[in-house]
Image (cartoon, rainbow, N blue to C red):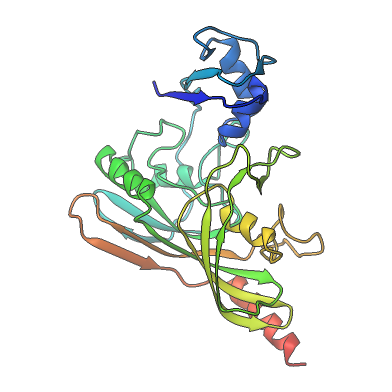
Length: 304
């Protein structure tokens, strides 16, 4: 089982709160269960969830084995861009969750993949077979899936080394006076809302997004975003941070936005070295129809 260590350099408040901010994919209630079951030690001994962390404390957290859910294959159509014995590249529709959660166990991309093929990597367990990386439910576009453990390890390492090419197209609010930008702003869990991320200095991870303006419209811009890091909600958080939130973003966008089709954020380009041959492969996905229709609507409005 994986063990993670944290060294505390100043007072940090409650043990459970600190860990929930550090571990993006684990809820505070799950953290509390891990503490209760003895999977978390502070200075070599168990402590309560309410323990107040002090400078010099050492936390040792052993990841609790996930409680496997019954994930059933479902005959859901998939847009497969590429497939061989090692890798799947899928063009995901918006409004589709990538993998099951504690409350949602059907109609996910994983359910569809399990119906399509049974030979998937088991590194992430039965709840996330083959899933190397994710894109948000409301985001459309390209996603790679590992069909065996060799492929999974290779693709995961490429993500860790930042050698995977990932570019997104986003329709954002506002017009830019410049053509290029680089956002270097650390992202962490929003202390006021655990379901959101935010730019902050403490309890955060480095996050870098490079963007290029593709088109300008009255009150809107179409931008290409290239990721140097892959933090949760990174593009959405960074664009909102600089005052240009993604149109239709239900978490970080404007309340007046129409969210019928979700956010206008599309994973357009995905490139990686094939895990077995080493050959560089790159794939491109066209903007979905609802995205193109929105751009035409904005263009028409500007020509009135």
